Image (cartoon, rainbow, N blue to C red; front, side, top):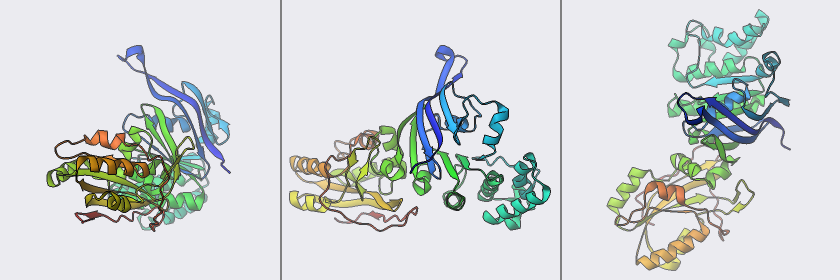
Length: 399
């Protein structure tokens, strides 16, 4: 049974902007959203989508212009600073640029919120030692931030955020400054935080692969609105909105990037088509079932006698279920290929990039496909481990 820990109810946040038409800019526009206790919840969007403003409403660093925000069973919308203090003590925060004190040691940085909270010195020392061990930095306790790598600095930031035993952890672009390997390590640590301490984590990010690796649920923001939300696999596997589809394109294994499609057009004269692979049926945000995709490609190729070449592809797992994409060149009589693709699109999500002579723009192809409307007749199981990239990438093979 769901247990809401954060609820936005028709929240609007406006800022005064000099020179702006009307004098106001709306950063958050009528957002209603529920985050359940124990979730790892991703909020994604491009720069300027309103993500960071939304997260600042959770700890009341910003107040809504209208609507209400409930945190930990309390309406914090208009609480005084004095009454907000016990709520804020239960909320930790980690930042993109770490926000560490350069003149304090690692141990002193972690102890800082405990000092503000007036913990006894022996309790402070014990808690800092526990957290240093948890984040794997015990041997670095007396070092300064300048002596640490980016990943180590973020581990200090996480330890500091956990110091006062929060119930909610807000991570605002916490991995944006890190390389991919370090990002994976930091996300694994955050997953441990969630699993071992039961802390609800809200991830604010523009990196879809971050959400893919650890989130349970996700909301997609655009121009201040939540345009799509739901289980992370469902949103990944069957995105409904163009902005979500563009995000998926940046993270989905096997979906070729724009310059690769251009190169494929230069090398192969036929129709370049990507078929999305979705292992299981999912439900969209309105509860409608979206069927599995890409399960009967070979049978349809044989049925229609289409010449095909497998050019590129890959499979990942999201929350233990397979998702990916396979790109083909299909060749033959135009009418024959059109008939084949029409039937394929009844059972699978098809992204048609056209031919070299008649290409379809990348943005239109990626954002314009529609999920198939009928349930597939075959099921194919692909093994994978929850939360791990198990990409099986192929290129240049014959189908």
